[in-house]
Image (cartoon, rainbow, N blue to C red):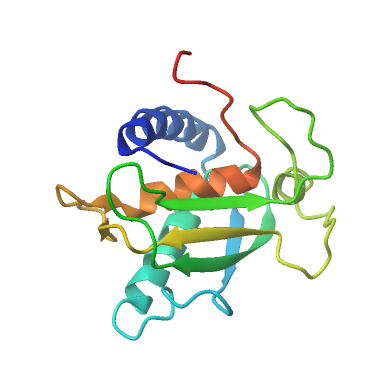
Length: 177
């Protein structure tokens, strides 16, 4: 989860630089496809006014992220939303996947999503169930396009960051380094 915008921006820059580097290596190779279930708990994604824009931005971000992997897999995520959030230190979004073994190492934990990607979809520990979940708190001020307004959060960057948590990337780095 992201609790402070300043920490997010510092971490997201590092994450995006690493991912851009990886994308040049994987360009032209296979891709991971993210499929979202907008069922129960997805009221913000099904909103009559903004739901279509929110879903399109999520799917665009997921397609971009998926193109950076040199593997082929279809990942099913439940897309959930809450009206909460807002204000300094508020949670923007969260995502995750179940893990078979937690090693205590807080850098990468290969769970359902990570295993499916690394095995090109051959290992599906949970069968037909969702591989993970992404939750967005729509009480925050979001910008859904590629030109982010001052004072708004970059929706696409945030959900890409969170989806990497579902893949298995975590951070064990404390504020003191």
